[in-house]
Image (cartoon, rainbow, N blue to C red; front, top):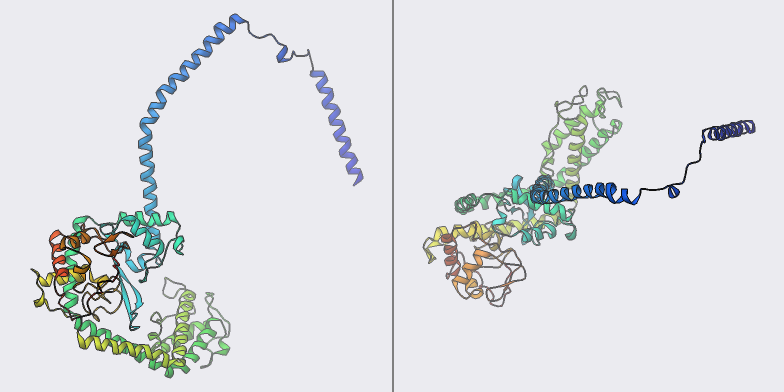
Length: 497
């Protein structure tokens, strides 16, 4: 090691001496330092050098004189193009967030056409759906800041969750703005909005005409829920056996399967897809048995499968492993629900039976029926259907958040009851009510006599004709809404528009 160091040092020394020698040979006459060299004469400085400098300056000034105005003339268009590009990119990002299967479209439908969200009727516990409104016309009823507030903080009293970071959601402010920009992009033309409002009146009429049948269907569904719960104790042993067998097979433990002898050597995976041949032979039959026993009532996603131990993609599209693990997951969920229901049958049945009794009472009382002959408006049937199409969602209990026909028209729900004399107590004249229907409420701004707006009440001035708004005003201002009598509104009740 020391020899190598000496060699390196020696070579470096020789190189340094060579450098000094070459430098001494190349060194000629000593150069004069720049600060000691004579410069240009005054005559040269004040003529040639000055003329050259002034010429360059004139050229630069001329360039600036021309380029700055040209830049100014194109800057406005450049900024506008940038804004357009940024908006287009924002709309695309917003569409991705909106149309994500776990995003807005999950409840409001693709393209914001409207949809539904699973929920429970709070008074009875009856499983039902919440009617999620269309969003492709929302800016005709609300302004951008109101919609942004609901996206960020959610909408209390409904399944609408908070999506913004400030409200506890996952989207930052830019992502919320992207969603808003996309929603603005999908807004329908106003003539289509008004046309849809007309078709909604017809739909409301059909809903009312089919109320008896709808209530009968709801009763049958509730009874089915009770029957399914009652079946759980009889399924518990089979659920335990089938669940354990499926779990063992998917984990490659056929030796623990409680059934007929194995059809293949343990652990063999002919198609090398991650499932043993034993699992691919037995799982389809296990799931078929579970479906025949009624496990699908506890997990509706449980479905039959077809697996071939010689083909990793039996259906030609999906991997057998993915299909099997997904369905065993649904099977395990059904098994868990069966066992929990069986072990807690009394607690499970109590709310279901109370809900059934509540529905039977609603069917008997026919609270949805409206006596149009008692109304003092020009077109009573259209007035009722206009109300149901535009107002009942918030002002008839259960219309959007539960069992649609279980309460009287205008009985209150997300918004206050509108049973007479509510309108005459809150507003001093029909014109005040009309103006409120046109513009809606503003958060923190008073309306009528004692109402305090929350921004929930939409304005219908851009989506309904003046004639239809006048008809709604006359209907609400009248002595009756045509439904069964309910307690009148409390004059001291605070507004909640």
